[in-house]
Each structure stands twice: as structure tokens, then as C-alpha cells.
Image (cartoon, rainbow, N blue to C red):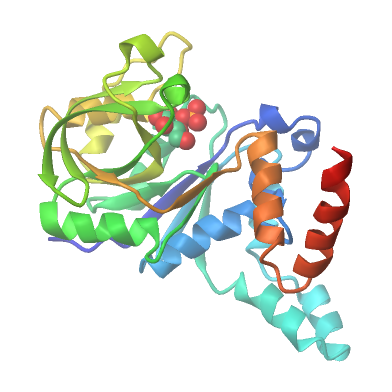
Length: 291
Ligand code: G1P
């Protein structure tokens, strides 16, 4: 079995939910307290042993490339002022094997993944979406890689969501529970079903471990009604050829793809941040009775 060494982070979306900020700023760079969202995603991949990460980006996304590049002027300045802690923070982000592909005409998640076909080659790989931050004892990407060690086949992460929310997600139709701790064989994968048509409440949550055969499926996947190539549709076809498994995530998930989710996550992480937690708690206490 080939090891899982490479990751794709699709980041070509227009970020319309965060306009006007995203007119000039990549939504992936919006900070959670002081750290751009994409860094959490990159750290999760690295903590799972991923060696090479490709970001599929697009217009207004230069800030992502700059963030993972060195900044000699800033580094010199911090060195001269002996700000070692800050210097380390700045330097840490350049020590990663990051690659960038620019997608000129974004055409859905499936299309973004297909863009990285040559970078991946003939190896299993992971896809991490930037709208979901995950916390658990073990990084979710590591959990998927361990599952791959058991199944040798594509495995993606799912989580129970409220029934009225299923239309925001890809949803699985589970066939059998292969392991009691939450590994499913899957009958079908359905992209954004209406609640009445949804086969379950188990939603795909933005972490996928895929075998390279997915690229052939993506090449043959027709655009949906909105003209986008859906990764979920290609996974559904792949499932007819090789089993695709679903691993149920039991940790904490933060949906930072919406304004309210992003704000909630900032508050949650802010209340744990050593520099500001006390002040933030005091502020919330002061504010709460007036609400
Ligand atoms: C994408 C996928 C969907 C998945 C979701 C997870 O949708 O198409 O299957 O459930 O990510 O966040 P998007 O949120 O990009 O519309």
C-alpha cells in the first residue's frame, strides 16, 4: 500500500459570504484570533504526516502565497529588536512544502481537485476544505489515514448534523457499519439533498482520503445544474468501482465558512488564547446582561 504523503487544499472559491472583505482578501486568510484559518488546515495535514501540500487558488489569493513565503524585511526587523517569539511564528510558516496552482476558471470543488491531478500522480492523497476546523485527540486527517491502513480504499469523514441542515452538505446513504466505532460502507453519496430526500443525517465534513482513481471519475463527471463539477458525484461513481468508506468524526467541528460560525469560533478560541482570554471573558460577562 502506498503511503499518503500529499494533500490538496482547494481555495479558489470567491468567498461571497464574506464580502466586502473578500473583494481583496482571501477568505482563507481571515484570522481565528491571530492565525489565518488556512494555517489550522495546513497544521492538521502536517500533524498527520503529510509532506507536500498543494493549494488550488485563484484571483485575490496572493495573500495565501505571501503568507507561506519568507519575509526577509520583517524577519530582519524582528531579529534586530530581539523579538524571538514573533520571529519564530513568522519563520515557522515558511518551513512547509507548499505548492500553488492557480485555477483561472473555478468550476466547483471537483474541478479544483482535478486541477491537482499531475501534482498528485498515482498515489492516495487527502483533500482538506478550509471551511471546517476540526479538533480531536488525533487530527481528523490522521484518523482517515489510519482508516486507510485498515481498508486500503478511499475513506471520507462524515458527522451527524441536524436534519434541517442536510441540504448544505454532501450526505451518505450508509450500507453497513463495518466497525462499531463508526466506519461505514456506503450505498450512495448525494450532494446537497433536500431534507425529505436525504438518505441519512450523516454529512460529509470537508476531509477526504482518496485513491488516484478519483481523477478518472472526475474527468467523466458531468457538471450539475449550476454548472459545477461536484466531488461528491465523482465519489459516488468511484464507489461503483472501488468501495468508498465513511468514517464518523466524533470530535469538535467549527464551521468557519459562515459569518456566525466564524465569529463563534473566534470567541471560542479567544477564550482559550493565553494573551486575551481573561480580558475577553470579562468583556463577555459585562456585555451579556445587556443583551
Ligand atoms: C462542499 C461539498 C459538500 C460538503 C461540504 C463540507 O460543499 O460539496 O459535499 O458536505 O463542502 O463543508 P460547499 O460547502 O463547498 O458548498
